[in-house]
View (cartoon, rainbow, N blue to C red):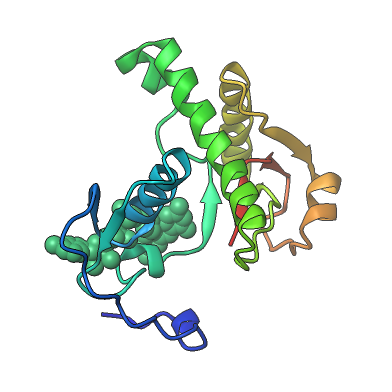
Length: 183
Ligand SMILES: Cc1cc2nc3c(=O)[nH]c(=O)nc-3n(C[C@H](O)[C@H](O)[C@H](O)COP(=O)(O)OP(=O)(O)OC[C@H]3O[C@@H](n4cnc5c(N)ncnc54)[C@H](O)[C@@H]3O)c2cc1C
């Protein structure tokens, strides 16, 4: 399996403590899912004993090998979600995605986690008429779901990103969503 470069200067894993004979909750897997579960359990009920069981080391799976995007982008549109699950469920899910981006920023700040969280949003350039048409219709669709994605004209897009024009691939504009950070 590929060795992520950020493991090179990470602090060494602490020696695992001896397993307790019993726990109130045992979480299997020390990735994001397991660690957030343990974190919230302990915040809700600080008195309980929670054990995270990890077969390799914390972050061994996808959680330690990803692109570092904290993003509310979802590869299914609000319209498609609503068609399958109803508009209230689609609104709730998209709001939860947006809230997660903020929560990760808040939590890393509150807990002093040096994760390099920077919420710069997502910018997607349109370099052709077909891309521009798709981008503009994404902006319109996102507006129906309160997503806050804006269309930036060329000058505003180039202020945010110093992209070069190429023959036949001129920057025409960009979509900008505020709901994305990097860690
Ligand atoms: C290349 C790549 C890029 C990605 N980029 C992004 C991104 O930019 N932004 C984003 O939000 N998401 C990204 N993802 C997705 C994201 O990383 C995963 O959705 C997320 O890490 C899943 O977390 P998890 O805790 O559910 O699983 P995992 O991180 O896989 O954790 C599962 C853990 O369980 C342990 N385990 C498994 N079985 C047992 C067992 N029987 N006993 C004990 N321990 C066990 C494993 O060792 C592992 O550590 C990316 C994924 C990949 C692969």
